Image 1 (cartoon, rainbow, N blue to C red):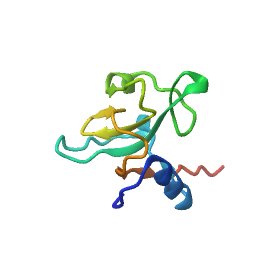
Image 2: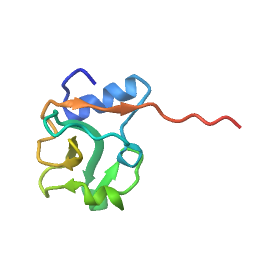
Image 3: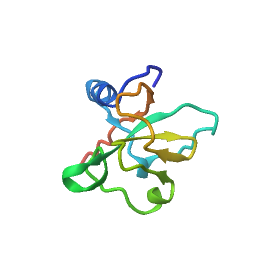
Length: 105
């Protein structure tokens, strides 16, 4: 969270740390409007013609009401309470990851 990385680099860093990129439906925080942009695990997959979270879940529901996505940008980031796709995927930004939930039987 304290380093600036491109989309692909942050995806690798989260994987290396054995955590996944933050998935918006689980995101319960809002950043101040004067904060930085943070990669949060939402990207456009052209083969599937839509926006998807890192776990393969399609963008839907409440998350759609908090997004401003653009056709020619394929990686989205959080700024305040809104998810934007206004920066290039190669832009270096902060990133948010979360640890996966482990369930024991």
